[in-house]
Structures are given as structure tokens and as C-alpha cells.
View (tube, rainbow, N blue to C red):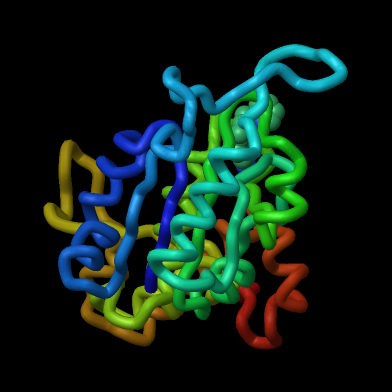
Length: 238
Ligand code: JCE
């Protein structure tokens, strides 16, 4: 899967991409992520990417010309992408379902906004969709772009070593994860639940299911509603 990320802070994006699961996937050639400095697509001596908003108001807005030029250049080098995503707090919320849909595309361009936002002509005539990573505002599109690359990459075959890990992910199963423990079995007087040491696989499965349900009920009851409630015989017992 190919990504092109356009940003005024390329180092902010390049660093995190070299680490962890995404870093390994890039090294293995499963992902091809190119990061472009928006200032390279300016034509003035000072490489200006922003300007004051028409009509007044606080802050600055990203100018359209460098963003149009960046996308033209990416298209010329890499062909037409499957989607051109603008990161924005008022975009469609990134969910498991949206991530799975976008991960089926072979090539994505992500435009990182900054300042108070991006000239609306970019959103209307360049971007094919706007995506938000959640209902809070961060200071620009770079962290959202990294979240999008990471979340989509997990659906690409081979990126996550153990496919069962992706299938079991919280938002695939519809339940929050059960608690995890590792050695030592007792640490500073804090014991691991005995059932996990029992070797009794059916009991362990039952305990994990109960824990996952209890956590989901407590912290994310909306997930249980969305999946049509708890199936018969799968409650926490009586
Ligand atoms: C961004 C900003 C709006 C004031 C470009 C924020 C997405 N879920 C999200 N949270 N924040 C963003 C995001 C994405 C791109 C930009 N800003 C800052 N946005 C109002 C400030 C600028």
C-alpha cells in the first residue's frame, strides 16, 4: 500500500514512521510511505504556505496553490490515488469500518492542515474526503495523518505478524480487550488472577469473556448496543 503525506513538518511525520509495526512494514516493502514538504511546492523566495483569511478573523489559512501543486506532482510521479484525504476536525470520524474501507485502496494521499485550516477550494476540488481522528482538536494534521497510516496499515496482510491479533482487535470483535498479565505471578504482593495459572483453557476463556463484557458495559456500553446486545448465554452469568 502506498501513502503520500503532504505537510509543513516532514520530520514530525518521518520520525514515528520508522518505529514499531509501521517501521517494520516499510522496511519489508509492504508499505511505501513518502513524506513531502509543502514548502517545496511554493514558488516565492520565502516559501510562504499561509495567508490571512478573506473576511478577517483570527489566525492564518493554508494557501491553495502549494497544495494543488503538491497533488499534481504526486499524480505525475505515482499515478491517480484511490483517495485524497484532508485531515480535519470536521471530517468523517475515523472508525474501524472507515479504516477497513480505506485500507482496501492501493494508494492514498494525505494532506495535513495547519493553522486555522485549509483554503476551502482544496477541500472541494482536491480532497476526495475529510477525515477526523476524534472529537477533540489537535494543532495540525500531522498526528492525524500518522494515526490514519497506522490504523490502515494494520489491515494490510503481513503488516501485523499475527493475523489473529487483528481479528481480535477491540473494534473487530465489538468488545474491549480482556486484562493481560505476564510473569511474575506475584509482584509486590500483587497476584495474577488464579484462573490464568490453572491451565484450564475453557475456564480461562470464560473468565476473559466475562472481563471483556464487564469492561465494555462499564466504559463503552454503546459498543454492546451497536452489536445488538449480548448474545444469549454469553452474559457474565447469574
Ligand atoms: C487541524 C485547527 C480547527 C482550529 C489543520 C486540526 C483533526 N480530529 C482532529 N483534530 N484535529 C484535527 C486537525 C486536522 C487538521 C488541522 N488544525 C488546527 N483546526 C480549528 C485549529 C489545522
